[in-house]
Length: 361
Image (cartoon, rainbow, N blue to C red):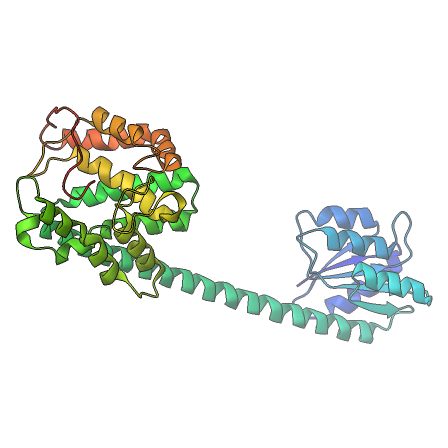
């Protein structure tokens, strides 16, 4: 335990050193000039400060005030040593942050006991702090394990859903990545962005409640079939509803509302503008863009540039303009992601722009 001794009298310093060094495990750094002690605080943090009141240039109250203003030493206990009896001096020292007072002439036994008691409290505080740090580290490690397992469960479930309605796992990966990019660019926090990244994979979970004949139909859907298809948002809300998990709650909002439109013409509830959850507004863009760029049994893939123009042209009608602007700011990254996917698969077919179909509109 490191103790600073500050006194302009060499004889007093010697007395103080002797009393403190009688305590096992203590280290004394002595200073005849207060300024030298304050300078040393920049690279040495004491566990206790003993400081005289009457010193040239700076008195003990001023020294304690400087110590309390330093973020690294604001908590360090300080004993002021003085032969003065005036109440106003003690009050000023207490206001500055003095922990205790010791009167001159110094009783070495009393000084040793007081210093030992204060250092003992400091050791206990450090031990508690170390234990708290260890517990926090254990908690953080446990949370990371939970998050990894949570992520694995979400992705395995979402890929099973993708297999059920004829999409690929790559679709879910791309939607999640693009959604996170948009969320980051919109300015959401890191935890929120991560949650959207994971929750977006469950955006079509409600499709497990649809008949195979609708999911697998190669051609356009009839009016009734289209009505049945649109029920997947309600099914998704029911499947994910009433959860205490923040992740599942956000996944529910996305599943229910990613087909709502900014102008209120979407489904299932006809929500508009800010009444649509921000997570659903973000995923709507990522989902539609990827669906346009992907080949399906009922349509050819759009060229990336055409799909980009469709997103931009739908700003303020289908999509939240702020989210579209965020999408555009990250376009270089998004374009690179989809070009890489093109390189790893069959070339996308060039087709003229056409009306969105199936579950996209």
